[in-house]
Length: 228
Ligand code: SF4
Ligand code: SF4
Ligand code: FES
Image (cartoon, rainbow, N blue to C red; front, top):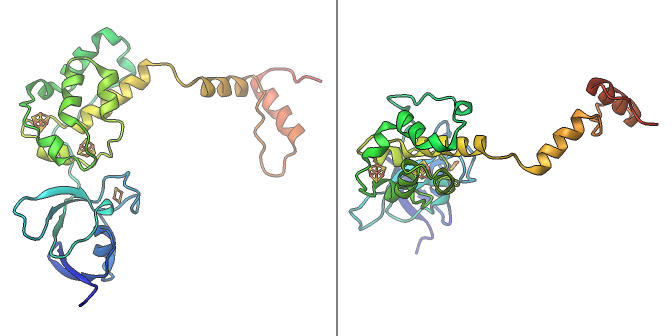
């Protein structure tokens, strides 16, 4: 009995030896990977989104090719990247009042209020995120919890593809995460580090420069006299 399996990827009939991911299977016949791949299998870029129909099943599911094992009889189609038909333009620095956040969501993503709770985005999400809930939380102005929902989003756009109301849930999630970051304090260790650099206490050494030279240069740029 052969230890190889057969599957179809974008119309190409392939024979591979498992275990391999769909992404590895797609490259197994020497076809160059020029699209639908970014992080080369780390599962963080969302570029390898594809539709999959398994042997004996009618339903089609959406997955990330680098995180899905190739199976015998699978039919796989990669999904091209697509751009928003209406770009969401906003200045995150202008969202300064947390009491007005729900207004900002309504202004920038007016479609979000019309979520029909169909669950299409949840079913489409290869990361298993509660996308529909994230949209509802954002509309309600609960940015912190909405940002948590989208924390592991890889911007594959599959929820957007599935949404009949053109809400672009992942882009809403991105805006929410940006706003939460802008409205909350930066990490203490980062603030401390920047403060130390500003006061010349964290010299940065360039090649060919010794520590004393670096300390002098850093102190001079910071405008503070160097001790000792
Ligand atoms: S929330 Fe949307 S864009 Fe993000 S991982 Fe899930 S389906 Fe992809
Ligand atoms: S797919 Fe769109 S309309 Fe349906 S639940 Fe998700 S956000 Fe709402
Ligand atoms: S190649 Fe980046 S998520 Fe699959």
